[in-house]
Length: 208
Image 1: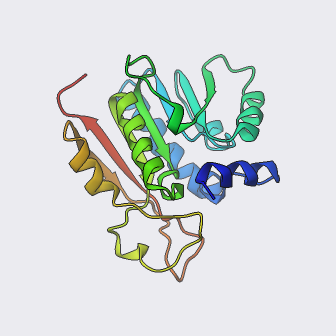
Image 2: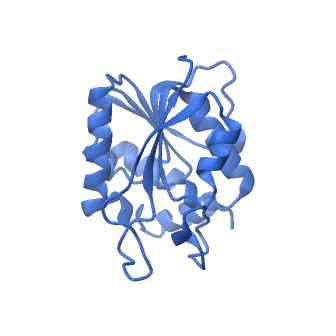
Image 3: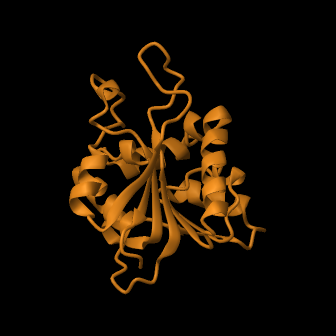
């Protein structure tokens, strides 16, 4: 099953975006991102994978565009924020998304708890291409990394860990890892309620 099909079926059955966008995990992400947006004077934000909007509800972004692969959930999230004039949304199909004219751009582009749900190589490659292609100044990935020793062994079939740090360094030399922020409640085999993700904050080396 393609990853986009998995999420559409999950949402259509009444599922949500998962524990990572709720409770202490969501609060941690919001605190890091809201501070970064304020400190860096970020004016515009794009997110690839906005999900059910639970994480977004905690965000303090001046202007925001959220993409998602699930028509079902996107409709619900659009309805949830229908009265918020600072937020826009659009359906995302990675294989049918092309912005060579550079119109879909923002100061900051986000990918939060998305990458390890991309089980196909081609979709993963396109995701990175679109994230870094849309980012003018900063890109923030909140994800696992396959080189992390904790990520060995079997995980759920809708999960796959990628060597994100190596891939970004190799494919996007114009970007550098500005900061890594480990989450305060890491996942382990003994603590399954923890998060497998950490923040990887990138900045463009040579400006726009």
